[in-house]
Image 1 (cartoon, one colour):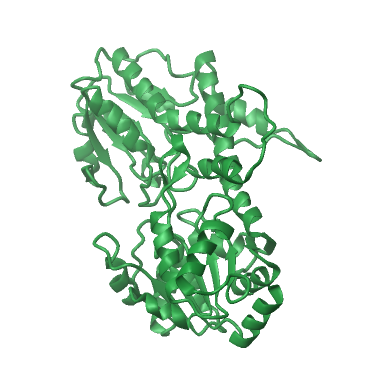
Image 2: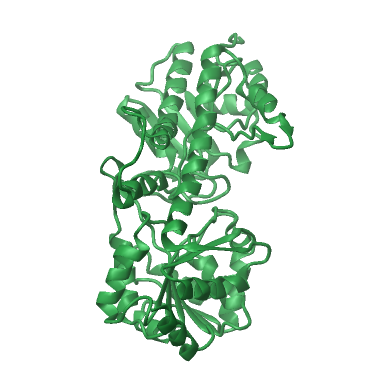
Amino acid sequence: MAGGLAEAFVERGPIRTIGVVGMGYVGIPAAVLFAEVPQYRMVYGFQRDSATSGYKISMLNRGESPLGGDEPGLAALIQKVVAAGKFSCTADFSQIASCDAVTIAIQTPFLDPSDLLPDFSALEEGIRLTGRHLSRGTLVVIESTVTPGTTAGIARRILEEESGMVAGRDFGLAHAPERVMVGRLIRNLQDHDRVVGGIDDASTARACELYSPILVQGRIIPMSATAAEVEKTAENTFRDLQIAAANQLALYCEAMGVNFYDVREGIASLKEEGVTRAILWPGAGVGGHCLTKDTYHLERGVKVLGRDLDWPEGERSLFLSARAINDFMPAHMFHLTRDGLARAGKGVACSRVAILGWAFIPNSDDARNTPSEVFRDIVVSSGGEVSVHDPWVEDYPGVTLSRDFGQVIGGADAVAIFTGHREYFSLDPAWLREATGHPHPVIVDGRNVIDPDAFIREGWVYKGIGRGDKNSHELFP
């Protein structure tokens, strides 16, 4: 089998034309980095011409980035490769037939995490369209984060059904998970090590050949396709677990009346050979597309691929407990807001709450699974009124967003900081209190971006995640 595929790759020749299916936060930077490689002659970005995403096609072909936020190097690189005639975005998937390699990067959310059933509909459509136009000797790489077993299972089956060919004999198939963060897309793709796993040795080798030219500092780490799927889901699950540990400790510090950040500094100071106590930061909640669902892919993989799991009887998964803690943090922000309003002699009902930050990550317009929305819904269901400011996010379904800071703050009884945008690190407590029009407005810091003492001196009721030393402060007149 492997010999036949190796021969098919030799007949095909070196990789020269590449297709990237899915023009999002992963597909766009990957496509233009491929296009910048001298030996790659042409890169096609494949995007459905839908009502919600079709606009990306014309923007990209004009050399413009459809991604908002601060993405160093991306806009200039798009402009460069379009001007050079090496990148084109299209809705014509038949051009896949001319591609030597095709990567697929489409979101894989869970509509209901409780049943561990992901929504693979969009990904399956992308795989089906790819298979329909596949030619002999092509390499297909799934970059989407998926349940372990998906590449060698569902993806392989669909590709073989649509193409009439056999994976591992007529075409290659691999999984190479993306490892990027919004705001660092280009740098991450060039500098992070790249995990690559094929369904056989020939597919793995061809995938290594595909990705090696775009790496600047990173190295290729080869493994099997299923191992690569486990690696990616575990990688994000571990980060989610680390955040949950910081969040739980912050809640403990609040309950015990101490400063989490003092405790953290002490913990992190223990460094010697073979010993480290690195600890992340607590916050108002975890958002985005990856951390909020990759734990469920890992858990599902155990059920789909595992036999008998040896596990402490009656104990819940540590990873699922971490997810529950992180999902709880927007509710905790509400509890802090409610308690702060009570100190000011008010209830949530009929109070006006200003949310600062709708994006889930600083200095970006990415608001996928934003914890701000959970907080907003709780406030509204409790009878409060909400206004939202974000300097980066232009619009969001069902939510009115404003870039007019004064308008959002004006008349607010409480201000909740949900995103660490650079604009929020220099808030003036005196000006801000005057803008609210209240003698004792409430400020709830979910990202540790303000100086508590400066706000307390100006008459604010301060509440902050992990700030047990300040959350019951004396109220200044």
